[in-house]
Length: 154
Image 1: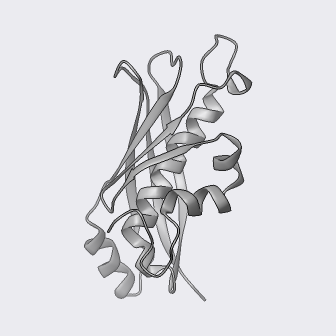
Image 2: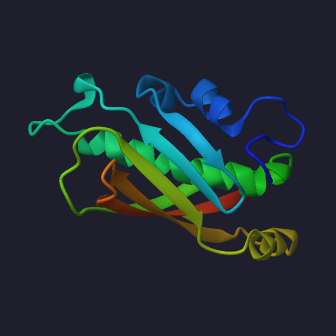
């Protein structure tokens, strides 16, 4: 799947920016978005700096969670008529000082077909999305795991 939902015109980045106020507030930039991975950037913005001049931990968390949501929408956009994707839990590790713009790369942790098969079987599947956040020099500054579910519509 590409960076657009199957029946809609806007890209996944445009959809997230329009429907998720924090993505819009932070001016997140959505790059590559496929059913396997998504790349989202947080520009360097002094309004969102912490006490050491880098992006605030909350902004980095939002960046990583938004990247995970982008890959989930790309992978499961065709399921939106029968299930809503929801983040269940997340764990983040801040591993190195972030300075300047940072980019999050999110990778789907299970084959989408396996998740859809569980949904088809009447269960509420859970699946991880692994995210790496890096500075412009390539150094990893944070890593995050977001566990998502597809909650069947009532």
